[in-house]
Amino acid sequence: MSTAYQEDISTHVLRRMKEGGFDFASIHPIEFYAVFPDEKRARTAAGKFQGESLNAQVSERDDGAWYLELSKVMYATYGGIGEFEQDFEAVIEPLGGEIEGWGVKHQVQRLQA
Image (cartoon, rainbow, N blue to C red; front, side):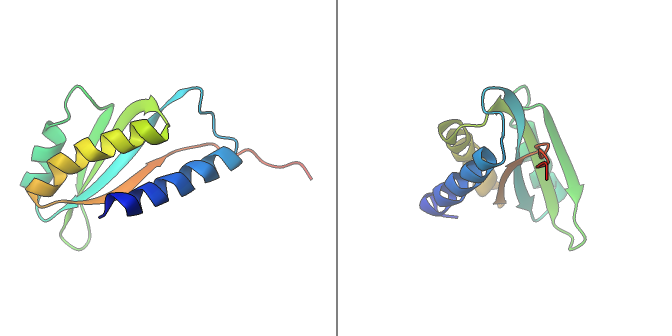
C-alpha cells in the first residue's frame, strides 16, 4: 500500500476522530492490523514488537489467512501513527504480510436532542 494513500486515509480518520470529540490529549491503545499467509509468519511479526506493544493477538481467519492485531499505547497523532506504521510495514512486508490499517476504540458522545 502506498505511503501517500495511507497518509490520505490517516488524515481523514484523524479528522473524523476530532469531529467526534476524541480526546487527543490522552494516550490510547492504537491498534494496527496485518494479514499473513500462515501462523508462523504472523507470530514471528508479533514477536518483533515485544516490549513495545500493549497487546499482540494472532488469530486464524475464515479464509485460512492469519490476522495480527497489535496494540501500541501512544498519543493519536498523525506523525506518531505514521512513524509506527513505517516500522510496522518494515517488519510485516518481508514476512509476506499485508497491512490492513489502524484504528482506535473511542466512546461516542451522544448528542442531546
